[in-house]
Length: 110
Image 1 (cartoon, rainbow, N blue to C red):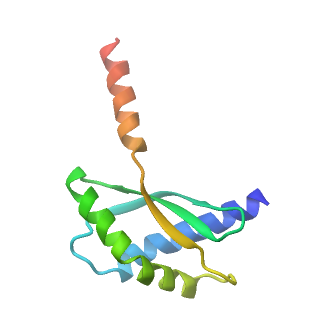
Image 2: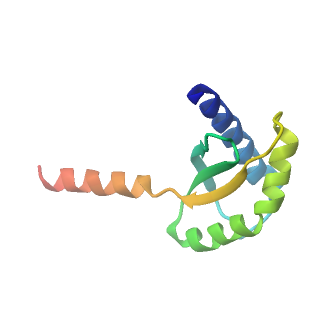
C-alpha cells in the first residue's frame, strides 16, 4: 500500500509543479518549489510542502496558493488518472532553514 501512496504522491508533485509554474499566472507568487507531497492512506488528502527562494515571498506566496487552491485542484484532477482528486493542503517547508542552522553550528564548532 505504501508504494501506491508514494507513486500517487510523486505524480501529484510532478503535476503540481507544472501547474504552478505554467498554468498559474500570478506575478505575486514568486519562485516556488515543491520538495515533498504526502498523501493520506485513503487518498483523500494531500499535504503539499512548498518552499520559496526568498523569505519576502513566503507570506504572499502562501496566500496566493491558498486563494488559488480550487483552480490548482481542478487542473490536477484533469491531469490525474484517478477516481478522486485529493484535497490539497499547502504547508511551508522550512527544512532548508534547519539545514542552514545545523551547518552554521557545525562551522562554528570547528
